[in-house]
Length: 119
Ligand SMILES: [Zn+2]
Image 1 (tube, rainbow, N blue to C red):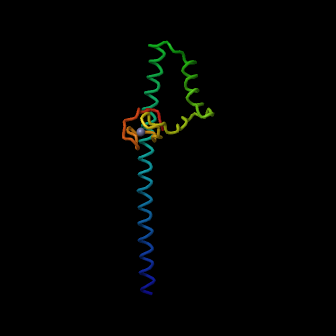
Image 2: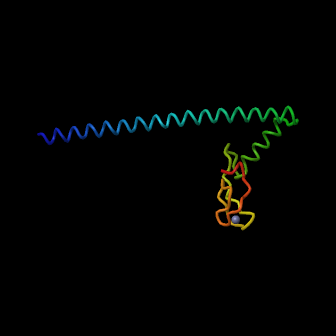
Image 3: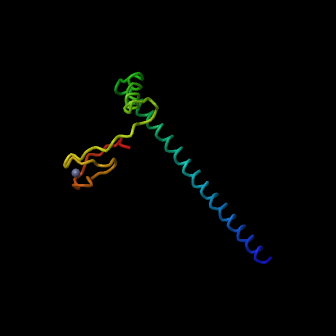
């Protein structure tokens, strides 16, 4: 009887700890989601400002800008509203592939051109 009561209390404690862990995990995900929404809003604002600068100061028309967006979108053969992942480019010094986002070649250590749009 005592053993059953002790076991039951242990199960209750485990369930309580699991519920707290789940609660904290949900809170972290909500925080991450809010930060991502804020990032998207900021990117939309920047994109619209740049779009307007291109039109007002450089004479581009909406049709031309839309065509350019579709051109970038279709690089992977699909117009799906997503930027295609690019394969790693080769190091200009040793011709070995350099993973996207690296500033220096892993093989020869030389600086490599940074592709700001690599993903
Ligand atoms: Zn290299």
